Image 1 (cartoon, one colour):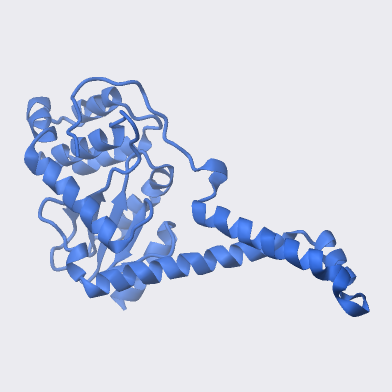
Image 2 (cartoon, rainbow, N blue to C red; image 1 turned 90 degrees about the horizontal axis):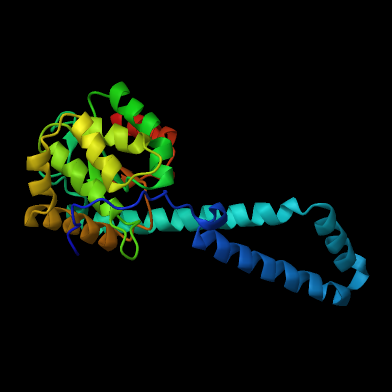
Length: 262
């Protein structure tokens, strides 16, 4: 892993998944289309006019394909969550709360919520306000932030820089202010990140030293290692008491919190 250079780069717009579909959905679409195409192709050979009836039904009700895709995606999501939970159950240390991680709420809380996220992730930004509202609504719950920069490519280091900057701010007791501001910023760049730190009252000399420290590199590398070992596929990913949320929606996390509280 290469340390980011503390020099300005050009503003980077948060990337979006092509067409809003994940590779799993696209793969499911291809399979569903193939199955339907095979079925339609075989219809002329089905006796009793049944094949033509099915064909006519599909032509009149193309939403059936959407239902097939939704059902397949739901199954894929369930399988992914089950796989992640199995990995955590086998090795609970993968979700151990590191003393270097920003954590808020009682250390002995009955419920612990963990978020793996990237500051440039559109989904992370979309749910951040509601997630922060959950923190306000549950002061008896411990909320832990795992800065997991995964959206950089090529020479771009904006996600890496943002994670390091936020963790540097955390060392000065300024994490949540910086988290909120970065999530609200639509187009992060090293310049805008530095401005956010300064606005939050972060000592920039200390922050710059922390940004390039070996300890910071090890911390983020450890988060990457844990995420890979669990088989995490994207951000944000939430855990409540060691169980992965089936959705990125804060209401799903809220339901898990309520259940964990009993």
